[in-house]
Amino acid sequence: MKYDLIIIGMGISGISAAIYAKHSGLNVLLIEKNTPGGLLNKINTINNYPGYSKISGPDLSLELFKSINDLNIPYKIAEVESISIKNDNKIISTNIGEFESKYVIVATGRNNKKLGLSNEEKLLGRGISTCALCDGNLYKDKDIALVGGGNSAIEEAIYLSNIANKIYLIHRRSSFTAEKSLVEELLKKKNIEIFYDSNITEIIEDNNQVKEVVINNDKHLVVDALFKYIGFEPNNSIFKNIDISLENGYIVVDNHYETNVKGIYAVGDCIKKNIYQLITAANDGAVASISIIKKMEKNK
Ligand SMILES: Cc1cc2nc3c(=O)[nH]c(=O)nc-3n(C[C@H](O)[C@H](O)[C@H](O)COP(=O)(O)OP(=O)(O)OC[C@H]3O[C@@H](n4cnc5c(N)ncnc54)[C@H](O)[C@@H]3O)c2cc1C
Image (cartoon, rainbow, N blue to C red):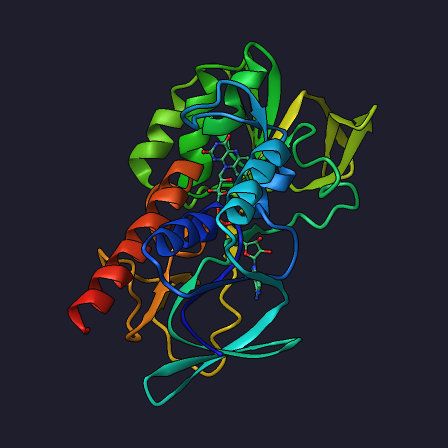
């Protein structure tokens, strides 16, 4: 069976795209390798998402999954291994077989780079965060550690310094790679203590929550949270057979969310953009689908 549109990834961006496509009568298929809802399943509390003053990530994920079922949108649990192009169509190869479609939306998200510590994954959402905007307010007047030295790390350290009592900024190099003006602003902050040439070698937990970080196997810092800004790895490994345009691993798209390869669109956290939030991911999915719908109508 040939689909109009195959969407790879069932995070909020892929699900939003599927809802718009289905409402317009497209013959759409979603493919997800893991749990529908994507990253949401790993987030304790959701902030900044309209309509929900208080909801957990897994609960919002369930709501999204309900929309898929209510609309009878078909989905497969399978890992996409690659995309290739045959004539004008896209062949999606997965571990359960091949699927064909006219258009593809890639909504595969991104993973955090790891410090390489044994309890790091387990403590995500239990003191470890990668999103100051989302979780910063949970640590009002608390002491927190932040690791990283690029623009995001410095911007977020400055942002968090206005909320937290004290920030321990831990950086593996002897100077920051962030822009000079940001570093100057950072250095003016009275409640930020910087540890250069330092690595976090252990995270000590208490009751499944971050309690201390140890730097260079030696210095113990008592903290309520650890914010990690050591970068992300966008999931782009499905482009083995296609020369897709990437910037630092992120998929480059135009205003309609189309990539440099005609008919292949990308949305959400896997694309190059400024703001990585639920609402922007949902927006991306909606706009990409609408662009495809308009294109199909034009080509009728
Ligand atoms: C700790 C944390 C807290 C956050 N808190 C908030 C918040 O409070 N408010 C807010 O607005 N934003 C928050 N964010 C950001 C927000 O969660 C993301 O921007 C959003 O979830 C991204 O959605 P997505 O659909 O792009 O990607 P994801 O949710 O990552 O979905 C991608 C999906 O693609 C699937 N996939 C990947 N590769 C393949 C493949 N080869 N084959 C098949 N499937 C594949 C994955 O399994 C996954 O399900 C937070 C982020 C983090 C890390």
